[in-house]
Length: 146
Image 1: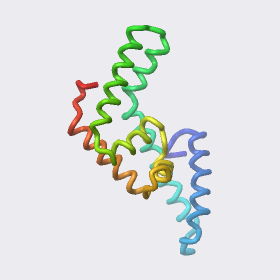
Image 2 (image 1 turned 45 degrees about the horizontal axis):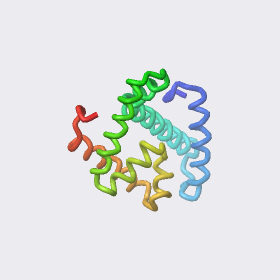
Image 3 (image 1 turned 135 degrees about the horizontal axis):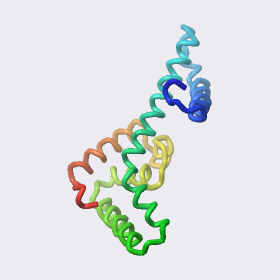
Image 4 (image 1 turned 30 degrees about the horizontal axis):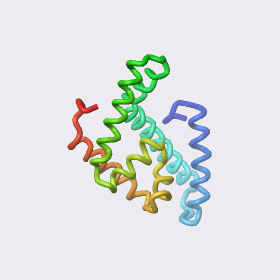
């Protein structure tokens, strides 16, 4: 609760932590269960906050565009469609190993684990490919393009 400052999020994290604890019990060394569980909970909470912050940064511009469509403004709808077309076109120029991960993560809203299962990769490979894809996008795409 001290990390996420939201009761519902804290409850969700507690449930996820207990699931992770059960999975990790074989690796437990019987040296301070409370400390071990507390560390696991803290790391899960920090990961959750990072994920929330990253999604706010990554999707802030797209959320504004999609809200315009709901207003029924034809001009805005055309602008949003043009933006989507430019994003799709730019994705076609991205290297294939980055493109599939980016599409799964940003367009299909899949988690690292889901992407790893879908693409038959290790979860650490998914994280690394997303990191490298973001670096590639910063290098090859200009903000004015979108």
